[in-house]
Image (cartoon, rainbow, N blue to C red; front, side, top):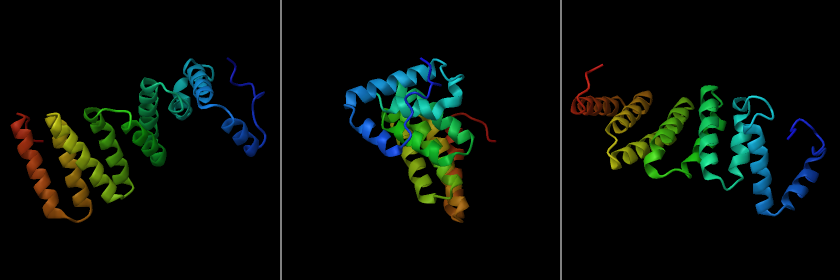
Length: 182
């Protein structure tokens, strides 16, 4: 399909909205899927240059595997480019599609973004949730790293005693894992 053709472009946003809202949900999902598949297949060139569009279109389909794949890739790319709000949106959507054990990594990414934005409460909540989920599935390395990130947020807020306690706890966890001190 040639997506470069603007035959179907709308000249007025209101006209676009009315036309879109008049489509049945199943038809919308099908059309979004076809557009996403065309973009992923290279219709606009390198799909990596269109990660936001792929995440958007697959989000409006019923293909959960594609949603997970493209939301993760778009979130990672946005985070790498410091497009923090876009990255947060992608990772937050991704969380709802993942079972608890698979949420640890996106939660840590969300926490790191919020930490950069000095959104301390949100960062702490995200790291604490990641730590709890990692503990629940016995993922000791992720549990330990989430604890480090919690300590780092405490340090950045001047809560030095709490930060030191968190780092001491992490040091003990490393010993328990048989890992050398760094």
